[in-house]
Length: 549
Ligand code: GLU
Image (cartoon, rainbow, N blue to C red):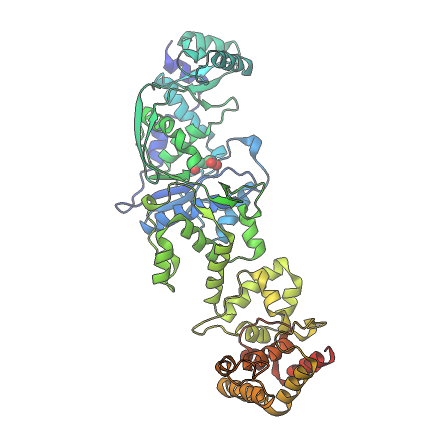
């Protein structure tokens, strides 16, 4: 009896690995092309960290003429939730980081290296486990949970490392015959890797992001096939990334400490190991403490959040690139209009420790992104968002021609308006442009706040100075004249030079007009607003303001 017999007994139907090695041909790609992947477990929650990883992985693949694929790691079936896969797929699609290969929904996939869902690859893992068994590089373990608990208790009492290794690896002692006999007796087993490592020896690893790291060798006989016949993450990672031709494993740095094990698995299976790039997690400043963005505490940890708030995908991605790579901000400053796809992201220049996520900065990026959009683009985006989240806004946007005028205020010029950070801001930013929404304003009058003054300004402006055909310069000159006629300083300079002479200046007069017109102290360009609102509305609003004095 030998290992071959054991392997055949456990996996009588598994194919030789040559079959798979032949079936999944090495990829033919240009020199230097990076093949990478995003490999989430479908837990039903799409974390922004996953989008961050995918964005980076897709970017480096695209930059080098490589491939980015999506693999669903669903071997822990206890953690599965309904629609988990759909959610992952749609979160990538929403942000335009859809993979070149892999799952495209729960049941379908594209690409030649599938199945891309681990639960569908059972026979592949079993073939490779059989291959390991045949060579005596894996063995059966019959330990029950109680046995493992006992080992652990002994290790704790002896104050040594816990785990299944060396002398503690209880089932290593069985001969092939003993293992076969136990199986024939119906004893339950799992399959373990027989680690050739020694803890007192070191390995050197050069991580693409973290740089040089030294680790003790792995000596743990980790489980490769569980009792349900499915592989553990470690084993599946080695088999899949080998067969799928991954050149760079870009993943969260919680896996960095598994590198010695993974390299050993690749080595023992006779595969070329990929390069590893371990990404630091996105952090948050929580009252001075730096901590990981948390699913439980931070709504912004969920990819859904950005969609619900209506923060454009481009803005989120720009910001994520910003925190991924310190060079991006500078590049963006120098290339304000170039699409971010053209920025060259270098993995080895990414930050080694966790980058801080700052919502205020993200919203600033978003304001800039939206400021560069045409009125039409803002309209389409806001409408799409509103259809899902705000029926009142849908109704406001119904008259598209008018909406485009409103959204076109201070847009498409040298210094476009930057007051919209997310689609959920749109309503609040344009509501005063809608007559049926404009009611019961509490007028926040400022420097000029006496009834008589306000009344005079509004009345005289309408009677004498307003003309809907004026160009901007004439319009403004007329406000100066109005100020002068009512005894306010025509120029701010003049006002400052002669304190005490004037009650207020032309700017304050404009403020009165602005407040009476919009109910706000802060708006985009008033000339443009007046053009959109038109005479009747302006008159009605001024009348209403006077009545409310
Ligand atoms: N399924 C693993 C996870 O969810 C993937 C790690 C990897 O990218 O290899 O963290």
